[in-house]
Image 1 (cartoon, rainbow, N blue to C red):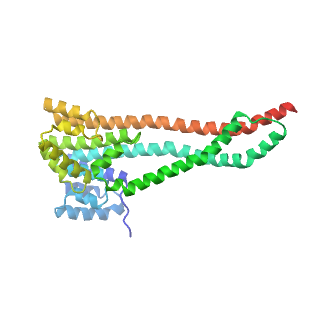
Image 2 (spheres, rainbow, N blue to C red; image 1 turned 60 degrees about the vertical axis):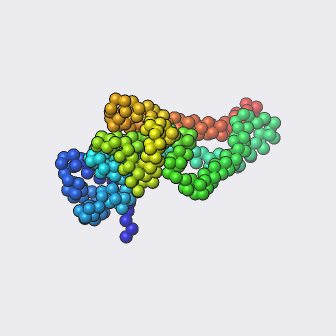
Image 3 (cartoon, helix red, strand yellow; image 1 turned 90 degrees about the horizontal axis):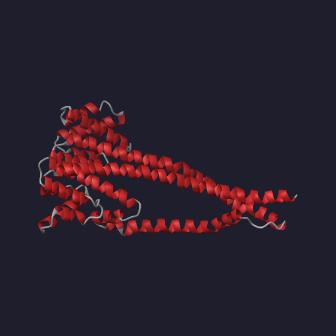
Length: 343
């Protein structure tokens, strides 16, 4: 039978429970062994295999990769294994992914209902424009009634509707072609640079990149490593192409004499404030704490931006639907009122 992948909620729940047990003094193997009694039966066999691999000396992050866990969560585990703060990293990583999932669910819930209304409205629009309105128009013209504003608006929208669909189709096709024939061939750093430059999406993506990088670096520095040693660990992360690439490139630039904050400033997928945070942290000798607080700040700003965006999207969609529906009804009813007055 084909194995079902773990849902993001299952992954986050599992890692959070492991983190909580580690905080209570459990060894990693015992923590996993205890949790297997509290998860679904379908996962127990996988946990038993994972325990055996763990006892054979396989790193925890490699086991999670084999279980197809989210790569960001696996990255949290990998770096935590290097600096020793596994319990805290597991809890922070699972909380972050659950917040992202909740934001995505909110977005789906807010958009799904208006999109269904738009689809139904378009079907109604096509019926009125192609079947009902032409018949009424012939009747109104025979009675010398001029077209009202809403009738003209409906016909105008009907004229532009195929063009709008054509443009959307071309945009989707060109984006898909660019992804398969160009974007996938770029190095991970250039990929993130391109994504961060996309309007609307870019600011959110920069917050995610900044949060992930700063929280991992803060853990490593807090474990007693230097910046160069931390970048060495990034470079050794073979399962994460971006981590490996950014670690290698930053090490090369450090060797040329550039300061760390100057290097960070060159990457547009990080927040503009990050170099200033790094400079301030190096000056007061508390770089790991400054980075940790900045990672929390990025997560908080991401949450606020998401909430603000969702509050804007829904009213716009409902306003568009309302205007279209009212226009369709008035395009037919107003001439009928004129007819009734003339009787």
